[in-house]
Length: 249
Ligand code: 13P
Image 1 (cartoon, helix red, strand yellow):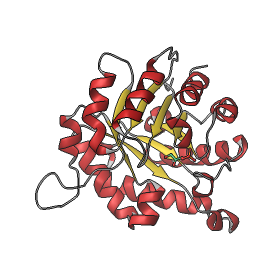
Image 2 (cartoon, rainbow, N blue to C red):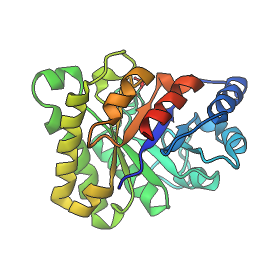
Image 3 (tube, helix red, strand yellow):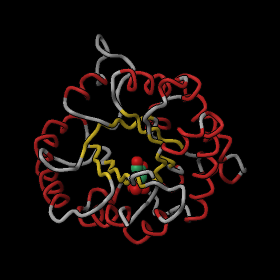
Image 4 (cartoon, rainbow, N blue to C red):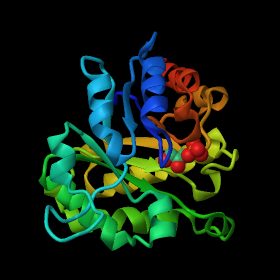
């Protein structure tokens, strides 16, 4: 039985004041059986750690380097994330891929560095609208995942999360229908099962892309949707809590 996971990706938003307010709001009256976590911008990790101390809500970083230390200006090491109590790290978000040119191979290297240093990667995958319309969705998603599986080898696949985020649904208000999401999630699980059926069975596959309180229940009701990776709605405490609640039902 996979425990649902709801993760808020705050992207490059917030200030120390707004973050205090948001976390106060999330913690007040949060009731869910889901595991809940937030991905603040790096510079606020220490503050978020203090604010979440003693609560069940976890936190992680939105990106990390594949290198552990040294002359890599502007980068953040997996060891630094670990040092500040992060458990999860987001990698391969479509904004990292499309704006900063991260390739499948780059993402695979980060995946390995995270696992080797005791962190849990949340691997984002997803197709553009053009790729969907040309029928290439699963070809693209499979390549994104297979590059990681090949680099990781079976020994690094004990604990990771996949987030399926169709690029055309991110920040657009367009959401994959529950059937569209389920179809891709089931295909992803089948792909994992070709590798190792028990890994496929335990690995959580989140949906992301304009998930809101009013579509969360239906999306999460799909057999292979194990939670959500939430952008915009994770910046509004009431909406984020409503989605957490939907996930725990
Ligand atoms: P939105 O929920 O704003 O569409 O963002 C999704 C996302 O990119 C989460 O990583």
